[in-house]
Image (cartoon, rainbow, N blue to C red):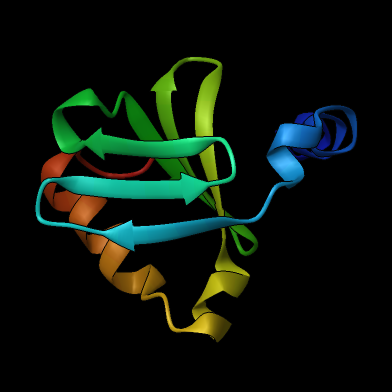
Length: 92
């Protein structure tokens, strides 16, 4: 829920670190100061989105948050959502 996202963002500094997101054939790659994470489609539990974010869940309470504003930097959010729908299923 939105209030949990806001609370996590304020509370946990690692969430605030800058990351690079790359869409690959196998999944999504996240790169940041803490390292690299290759998330394969088969490991995605579910996903959901709203006007501000795309959440990619690894477990019921563990997720990667992709802000829609990354589209301003050239990331194709529509392609991410299409790939998630194709490989994982519809957003819930």
